[in-house]
Length: 350
Image (cartoon, rainbow, N blue to C red; front, side, top):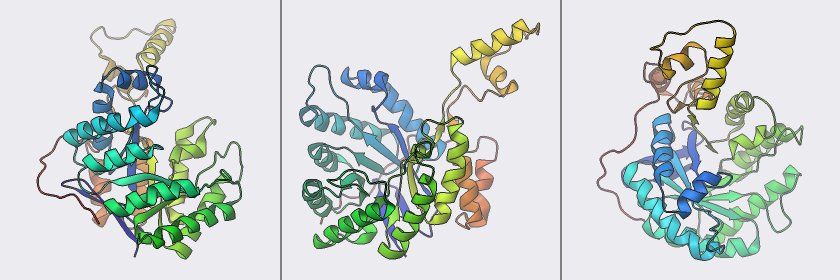
């Protein structure tokens, strides 16, 4: 049975066909987050700290760390990204004990991260491009770490699922030439937005089955890609993830946190209530208000996608005696994590 082992200094996460679904938290990534990018360039890591703690509290098994900021002062990521990656990884390791995923398109940032990351991190990523395989696979072998393999090559991302399978097979075969076993490769078959391609969901389910049955590899994806551009994205994601698990997908890079209700939304709802002639108690706090009117919570908490994954784990008999599901649905369920004791462990090299 294929199992991919990812480790921090004190904790192990197992990605495998017979294991609970592995949630890889995606929030520590400045891509598309202008405020976070500006903070990182200014040396402000407060959002990174909050995101790391919130994702672990929400149930993330692994945290993805991306330092892809294009500095206004220096647009060359080959110079700026490696030291930033090191700084973020050191910070996150000091806050949480879950394993990490080092995520970069800059080979120098990946190697810099591997030098300081404790345990056995997941490397994200290698593609089927010849130059990329030549750069990344030696690092995977040197540091004895698992790697995410993305199913695109020099021709780009194909809409043909057979072509994407062929790219994945090429990466697995090339990795084997370096002595890297298939169980250390987690393939991302590339989830297309269903709003742009009606068959995107069906395609990825078929691909995942083939990858499991023919190549024997674990799989992952950017879970929210499936719902891009559509309304009620959480509803689509909640259906997609258990279906993907049923097809054999074993992990996803995703946001496990339901973000706090924005103050603007609270103000809008209060104005609506006031206009309807309804008076609210003067001492009602915002948390009571948003709970009463079904807006969510002022606190970061596990998202609906985490509920769907937990239910699917239970139904697939990957939750012994339903313990995780019971805990998730108990008062305060899904909370916890954060800073924990750290001892033992070792760097692993080939």
